[in-house]
Length: 269
Image (cartoon, rainbow, N blue to C red; front, side):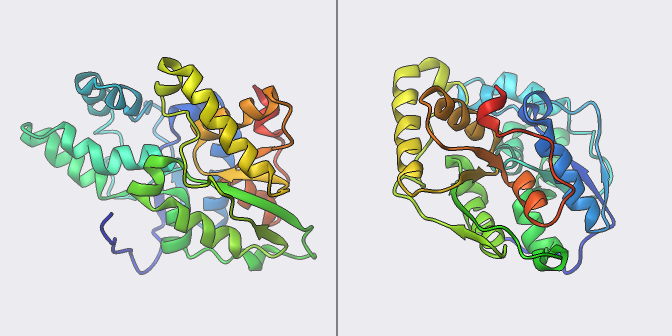
C-alpha cells in the first residue's frame, strides 16, 4: 500500500458511496456516517443511481460483469469532490481495481483513474482529512466500554483500515480497545466465498468469534458490513455474547450522537 497525500483542509462538499450492503441490510451505518460528516460541516451528496462496487463479481473471477457494474457508475460522481465509502473492502475495490478493469479503454480508464484518486474509506477520511477530534463532543463522563476490532482482509491490506480504526477508537475516552489473537484473520465471509465453501467459512468465523469472546469484550467493531453481518449472525447462531457494531455507528454513539436506533447487528438478521 503506497503512502497517500491528504489535503490540508476538509472540502465543503463530498459524495457518499454507501455500498449495497449498507443500502440493503445496514442503513443505520450509512445514516450515522452522514451524521458524522455533516456534524463536521460537510455537505454530503448521495447519487441515487449508485449500486454495488462490483467486488463480488470481480473476486469470483468475472471481470466482465464487474466492469459493467463499475461502468454504470463512472459518471455519477462528476464533481471533483471526495467520495467517502463506509467499507474498506469496497473502497479498495474502487480505488485499486476499478482502474485495472478499464485498461485498454482510454476514455473509461481516464474516468476510473480520476475517480479512484478521490476514493476514501470513512475512517481514513475522518482521521486524515477531517482530523476528527472526538473529545469536543463529550459533555459528560462516558460510560466505560471494552471493544475488539475486526478489519477485513482486503480493507486491512489495500486501504490500511486497521490503523484508521485503531487511531479513532483509541482516541475515545472511556473506550478500551483489546487486541485479540485472530484479529488479522479473515472472518470467512469473503463475498461469495461463504456461499461456495460454507463449512470452511463457518469454521473461520467461529474461530474469530471465540477469539473475540475470550477477551471479555463488550462488543466487536468493524468498518465492513459484510464481515459484521457474518460475525454478528454467526455469534447469534452460536449464542455467543458478541454484539457487533459498524465503526460509523460506534463513533456517533460514543461522541454524544443522539442515540442510534439500531439494535446490535447480530440481532437484526
